[in-house]
Image (cartoon, rainbow, N blue to C red; front, side):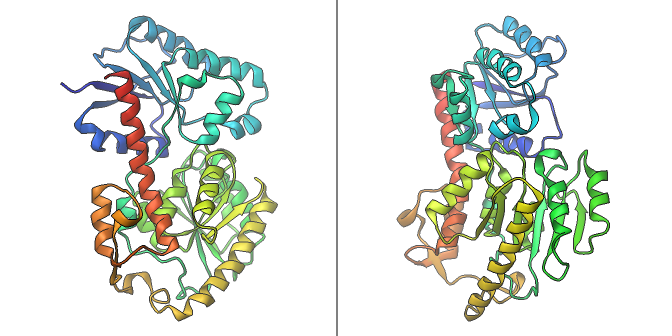
Length: 390
């Protein structure tokens, strides 16, 4: 009989968190574990009925929820508790918390109820250790991810020479965290003849963002996007202007589509930028050096210059000069076993697409890395669960 894992969520509007959790429950781990996702309001003292072998929490910790967690621990004293920390990180504290000691006291009490606290990025793990929020042996660095094979199988283009100016995409929850207000203010400093922006999403800042975008003829608010891969096909780059970001799923989604990435360096985004540049110093990435309108403006301007240079350099490559829909399939295949170790479904796709080549080009290796991340996340989850329930 498969061990039962109950995943407790308390905010259905957290798109990236829920996407990742749903992907986990549909992954290969479902063959060995019985996953259940349930909405649990920890601000109320309510009894939950479960025979789960492990209970994993995914909501943001708070003083109000702490009593609810204690209540559940009293109900299930021998059941291992996990908390996957999707919400808090160093830059969250810097930008949002006026009383840091009080906040850290709440986190320490919350984490103390857990058998393991799951970190989703190396910088977040280090933040926990540096501030003594939880014992090092009780932190499990698992990471974050989702199945990106569908992204990789889309026709992609890194430079679209059929576009006279670049089209930049931004998407996510319309919330202060994402920095879209700063992005729109930065776009006001960019001439309409230089680039276009497509901003997708919904959330509490919709009214404010609509007002900021209304005078900008080169900005389009496209609403909610359910098919991210299709949305990204029409764009040349993805910009991520987040104020804080424990991980940043948008980054690896853009990577899987081989899109140019313009990103702040906060928290997990900084980890991913560093890893990207270490794997390929020539990777198409433009860092945003500070979380400010000025820095975002400067990054967009730098990207525009680099994009035109890359566009000019690509004119000798007929395939890159064609619209994505008209690109012929690659006539070379990548033998995955020679260059990396990835999941079988993705390996079959990449074998088909790159079969006559000893190894893919540098930018395709970045795409493969984004897929490998999901395999790594599943492996780390499997190792952690097997340690708790042998």
